[in-house]
Image (cartoon, rainbow, N blue to C red; front, top):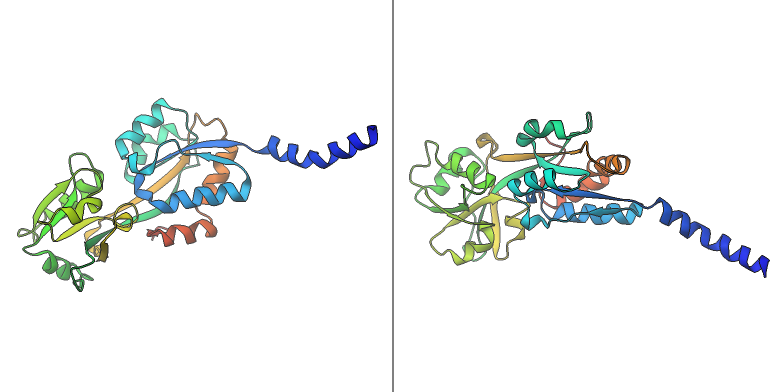
Length: 252
């Protein structure tokens, strides 16, 4: 009897050991990272046996919501636009903040609208939009929308009519018949919208892009595992997923 119990205990011990070693972290991210982030989370969990909790769906994670949440809720890692990081740097552990990827903006059109215009250069981009109506995110509520508006307000775009939509403009583009194009971020919005095809990336000279960064918070409850996940976000394995999701990595 004792011998059989010992054999059973030994056979179960690896399971108990794995359970004891498993841990979890809580991560919040702005939605601009797109679906690639969700796939990376799943891959990390399968690879390590640890749990990565992401309480806020990416579709409900604009910048303002994330900034409020990181102050009020428990979190180990928070992913933010790089432009926002200097104002929040005191909330992160020294030396843990790093660049993750770059989100590019693209011009979207309906799949039924024929051939896409050539927009490889700034001159071609301006010519393609001349006299057209462009749908954007609401600039009042969206960093994305404010950035697009800042570009379309520049000289050379005077004949472009700007109309906006709350939330993901690409998702409502087909219902907004007055709009010829939708201009938004590629991973989070254009790639997630049905019946929308990408005409091309906004020319680099217009600097319409958002770099995003991540770091371990000073209040992290599991900083060791948080650092492990942070390392994974920039690993070659994760970078292949980022690229397939429309994110440029590493940041040029």
